[in-house]
Length: 215
Image (tube, rainbow, N blue to C red; front, side, top):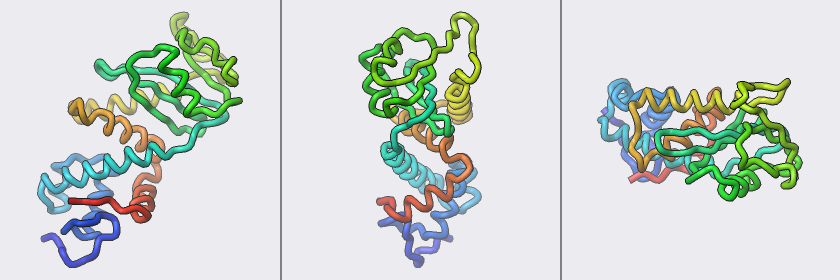
């Protein structure tokens, strides 16, 4: 039975109580399915799907506010079906992702300059679009995968590649996602990776400051 009487400081314009919302949030952070969450919490599948959708939209907005990387940063790309994704990982283990139409220099350089501070050290593979990064104010080191090279001392892009594996495994578990929802799930994976040890506390804190507007 849903408690309609308790005020919800996290989700506005809703009949779902704060107690239920916290339960839903915890299941979401545990990456539980909608069906399992609905059964465990005692809400309808439709209600759970709606709240999970709100949370993904909220995470998407939080990802936009992340600060630019500095220090040592790995840059790499990966395909998700027909979509080409550009990813960056700072050596503090945080990642940033963006869907790109192609991997041309014209596409990549503005993204790199917008998300990585100058004077940072950038590690990439041998893709030609990275040529000239040193002239943009970066210290640039390459790993040439086509020559069966995967690391050169501390120079590698293994961290961002671990994120690709994490994200693809998560999407595979979901048996795919709708095309129009792909970016939301990609940014959710980014957020899960960045706050995998503190996701529940992070979301609870942020939503408390800026509540989600329900329907």
